[in-house]
Image (tube, rainbow, N blue to C red; front, side):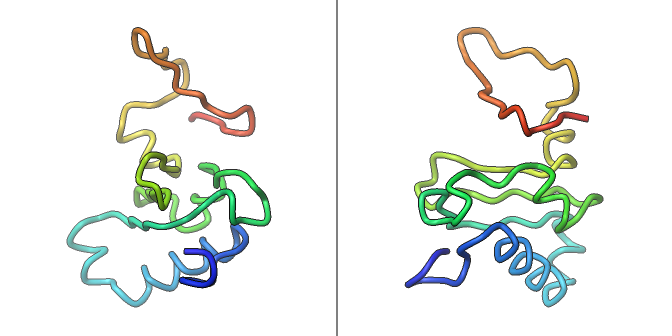
Length: 108
C-alpha cells in the first residue's frame, strides 16, 4: 500500500515487497504455488498507472503473481497468471466485454 499505510510509491517498491514476502514465506508459496498481494493504488504511484505483466514477471516468471488494487475492482497479473487464466496471444474479448489491455502489455 502507499503511504501512510505502506511504503509502495513506485513499481520497484511493489516488486521488492512481493519478492521479500515470497522469500520469507516459502512454505505458503510452495503450498499455494502463487504470490498474491493487495493494496496497490495507481493514483498514488509515481508512475500513475498500473503495473504490467512485465513488471510482475520480476517477482517470478514461474509462479503466477496477482496484485489487487486497493479498491478491489482492478488487478494486475504477470504472464504466468495470465497464461493460467487463459489469456494468451490471440485471445479475443469476451462477448460484450473489453479486456482493455494496455499497449505496453504483451501477451505470450
